[in-house]
Amino acid sequence: MTEYPVDVAVVGGGVIGSAAAWRLAARGRSVVQLEQFEPDHRRGASHGTSRIYRQAYDDDFHTLLAGRALPLWRSLEEVTGTSVLTLTGAVDHGRPETVLTRASTLGALGIDHEVLDVPAAESRWPGMRFDTTVLHHPAAGRLHADRAVWALQDAARRAGVEIRHRTPVREIHGLASGVEVVTDVDVIRARHVVLAAGAWTRPLLANTTVRPAPVLPSLRTTQEQPAHFAPVTDADWPSFVHHPGAELDGEGVYGLGSETGVKVGEHGTGPVVHPDTRDHRPDPDGVQRLVDYAATWLPGVDAASAVPDSCLYTSTPDSRFVVDRAGDVTVAAGFSGHGFKFAPAVGELVAGLVAGDVRAPVPFRFGVRRPVVA
Ligand SMILES: Cc1cc2nc3c(=O)[nH]c(=O)nc-3n(C[C@H](O)[C@H](O)[C@H](O)COP(=O)(O)OP(=O)(O)OC[C@H]3O[C@@H](n4cnc5c(N)ncnc54)[C@H](O)[C@@H]3O)c2cc1C
Image (cartoon, rainbow, N blue to C red; front, top):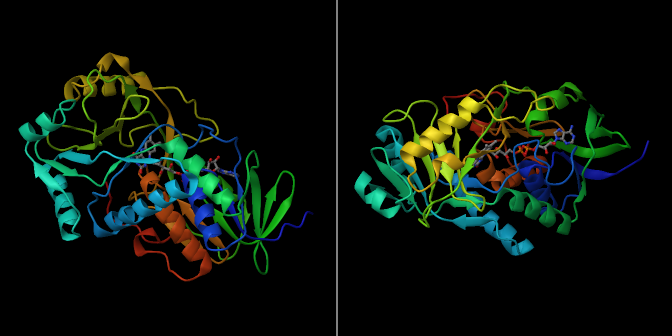
């Protein structure tokens, strides 16, 4: 057995594991990060050219956590010299109750925002049609996903993290103190392990013998398929969330401009899959729904130009994340299709949990599940 004395082993090289490794190393921990696949792989949840960054949530907790992530994204850009976050503003529209709840959360927290009517919004963002009330907040925009993961790993390395790609973790065993993390080539002894394994969290936990064992809520893995559309104007594209309930049915639609076109997706409508056996193939009915959506709501794109992509959601029953600690194991999972924007703030929280100087926030605890957050 190879001895590898390290403070923390982080399992997972997606945005969450990479952010956790960076923030742990920033606090002086020795860290090894283990990722089963090659750099830039497309089999998890963190690849692609874009993710929405926004602060408008229904509750203070998520709004403040997104706000905390902003200076950390900026600090990542400074440390690595890589641009990851472009503020374009974001709009919410659709069911007025939902939109106005978010407006009042932003207002109560003193976050700059405005509520517009449809004609004002359509004249400001001519690439879009709007449904009822429109909320705009400027401290929002788009993250470049691939660059962000790359930059997090760059910052982690600069802070001393050893990152090993193509290194699947097979088992984790609890010791009297610390853990043994079993890979194909060695066994790593660490004081603590962080599981940031996305859709593979359940299979990994099944091969984990630590006491106390983390008891997670159910995690549902679905294959989602946003599509990119070619813009036909040089209109500005805010990030947007179109909430269902007024003129739109279903689970809602999100979108944003990106280097590869205007990305549009339904929120969490894909089939349940296993991450190792999914087919990565677009469902033609789902693509058609996005084409129809673009034809109706996005006059600024060519609706016939859809190029679908495939990605995973790993969702808890209430869409709240699981970020909590049991003994020598911290789990960061269940990011429910909206975790990217928070990543450095989640990484900071993980580092605090490992250090033992914070408790998990109530909404993220293993046992607590509450009504759904959109
Ligand atoms: C289509 C789509 C659109 C989205 N849009 C947004 C958005 O606009 N805004 C937003 O904030 N969020 C968005 N999200 C959600 C966000 O992308 C995810 O919440 C986030 O990427 C989850 O990151 P993760 O690190 O938990 O998972 P992953 O990126 O899947 O990373 C987990 C990693 O762990 C590795 N791993 C697993 N098991 C092992 C093992 N045993 N050994 C070694 N390595 C292992 C995997 O290979 C994987 O690389 C979107 C997600 C999708 C799919």
